[in-house]
Length: 463
Image 1 (cartoon, one colour):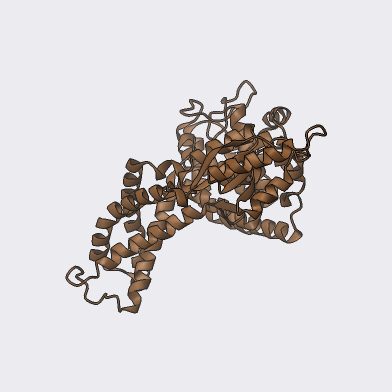
Image 2 (tube, helix red, strand yellow):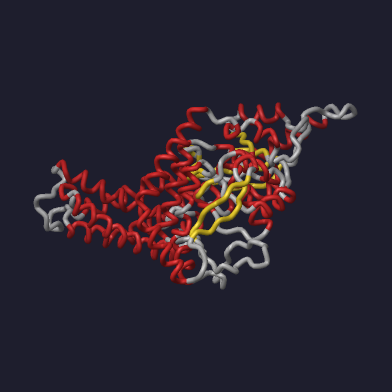
């Protein structure tokens, strides 16, 4: 796993993206062969041709990312891969047309593009099948053994099984071994260690992942040191789970991991930079969006009676309430019983304009004022109403720790999952929020904004 912007990207996924770019480049270069290209001015000896091909490759790979062609659930689905690749090429053509209009010097001959694109779909499809096959080849697969049983071991095994691009295969479990022998059996522990080493060698294990629930006084340190000395990697299961999933394992979370997290002690430089960024961007956004916000307000008033702006108390940093502003998307009697409920699929409480606002996320524009005031930040855990927050805080351990940082208009949990309707949904959302709290940084904030832009462009998740 490669750490980038305080998040983790599988090294093999990054390798796949690089090789995808090489396959695309090879397809475009092949069209420059004598007798194929109709553009005699473009030859491999031309210094500009590499820049032009590089631009086309970069746009294509970015579009592949935006269409989730590097997501686990798509990688192994041949039909999805082919369908999305066709969409990618269509989107790439539109983006390149705009770039070529703005910067004619980077334009690649359209015949070269069309000929190259004609072989890109079958080439990339075939390469991805080869990639998945190589991932399962013995010498290229990391064979892992889980040390200890419990919820963490079960969840981690399921996650690794559903992520073929990681190239990790769980061979089984190894029961925990005591670090010191019983007084009446001094040789029993030695025999147990030798049997464990024999099992590891026979299974050709390359890494041992510690998934023990209780570790104090139970970690077999000398056994783990022997493994290290034999070239077998030893990993902490909690760390690996966070790297693979982007969330903390609530069922195995120890208070110490939160106590020593940098999110609880952000440097003054990071805090000031984040606040200055929020002020500048929110003020600029308000100025630029003011005409659009005026039109939206008129449309809301025309569509249904009531104020255009919806005000609601939410819980902010430190558990302090504040008033959140949004464009009203429901009728004025939507929560007549006094119990606020989140929007649902095909919610009848939504107005005609409100349904469109939620799909496009334009109902969130007034929150720029909350960000300018300092109630919120652009990135952070999503704030909920006090009643909902207090109920969840009483039912879910560590829930109050999400109040450590300013709430956000978008966040790590928002870009990874949608609305929450059950206790289990909120537990998973908290797992993402606590990952953000533990790893908060300017780089992670920019990554979340990038992912949010992806969601907005593709119109996903709105209700």
